[in-house]
Image 1 (cartoon, rainbow, N blue to C red):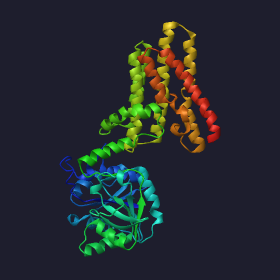
Image 2: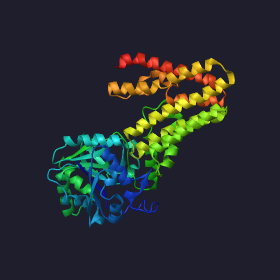
Image 3: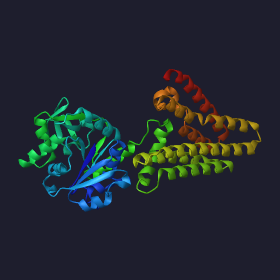
Image 4: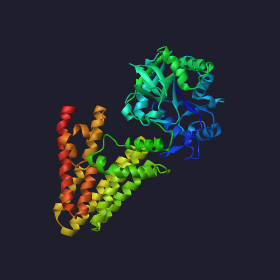
Length: 443
């Protein structure tokens, strides 16, 4: 399918805060329309039509032909955009292909990726004379309900839509899958003096052709400064991974998301952040080797926090790559190695005890097992291993990387590095044996 963006309005409510057209307002490093294009690209959509109006030149100059985003962009200009967004949407009839189904969305609405994927999957279930509307019936969770277009719904169909509707049980999310029937309805509405998109949709609703798809993920209409800030908050919260360990979820993310919020506005890449995290771990190792244990502990925890930032930026700015994931995993293993060597060097230099070498050997063989187990489980089953789901009570064992670095930090702060190394060795192997036992049931 192709995707059609409505990007014709003035965006008056945001204009005082950002000196640019609303579709080009940057949110965490990407303009609103770029974020939507890249989200749809993740869903397999490669062809886009942008309908412009007030800021046609600025938008076209910014996006170009779409090559830099890995897509193809075509532009249509709506001369009468000031009449209403129904007139703007109807402009697409000039490029419509017979019997085509197309995605139509507002360029200033932001959607969760899972929402878009499940919505697009529904395209095959609508008839050629129907319209599919993304709708939200979780009214208590809808941001700025008063400004939303309300829907009176009966089962999976809309009976009537309107911003001032009092009898409603859902709201319109600003995301549609249209057919030729939508363009016919818009044409009819315009001929009757109805220039809004809702006017056209209501013609379909009256004849039972406005089908609803109820969403379960987040969406936000970025219309003013307050909704902009709310959207920024929700996007950052969405970066928390289901694969996070306990320390990462409840401690590290509190700091890493703030760092990501700042770095997203820059040109720094996820791989560059990975290198910074590794160098911070090297700094921790040198501090430990020199007996600067407090400094080493703090650097170790900082490295752990920064280690989450690369993935956050990659997901936030659609910069994920297979190589990036591999690069991160390899440098993490080297970082763990050098920190254990730093601690061992200090311990052995202070005591000349072979116990230090034995404990270090046990720690170094156990530390990679957590990642190795999860990667092998995924390779064999095709499913990710989620500690929150599969580890049960043992998910609180500090054996994942975030937990291990937290132990090292505590050992450095309280000058108990030998004890920290022993705990590392024990929990790493204990977690491995527990997971092997549980894997018999899971596999």
